[in-house]
Image 1 (cartoon, rainbow, N blue to C red):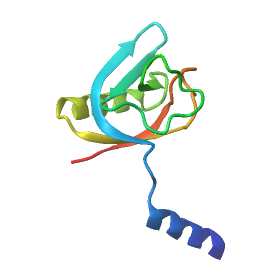
Image 2 (tube, rainbow, N blue to C red):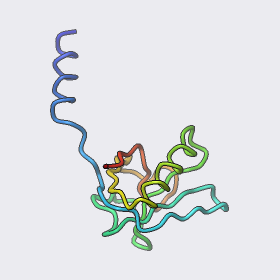
Image 3 (spheres, one colour):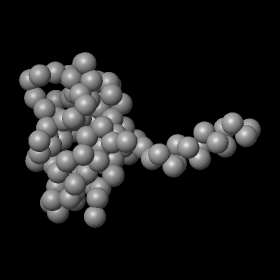
Image 4 (cartoon, rainbow, N blue to C red):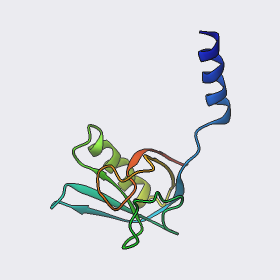
Amino acid sequence: MKTVLVALIMLFAIGVQADTTAKIDKILMYEGCNLVYIYLVGGVQNKPACHGSNCDYLSFSMARPMAKDYLSVLMMAFAMQKTVSFRTYRDCVDQPMSDTVMYFTVHG
């Protein structure tokens, strides 16, 4: 129990690192595969091996439980030109050629 508590304290102390931090250049919604593509100013940082070289975007499936919430907040961040820090799966989970968004933070 003590080890778990120490591990949690260390996790909160060091914080969670973002895989990519940038402003959003454009958002593409593609009905054909139910995906949202997020193109970032400066491109995707720390790309996993599966990330294709054809485009520079992150993605997530609209089938995810919070997808509508993600999309509305990302559209607000885009409209207000806010910087967003994305944490990704570091894997191409929802689409075979782009890193998949796990969660994100919009900066004020």
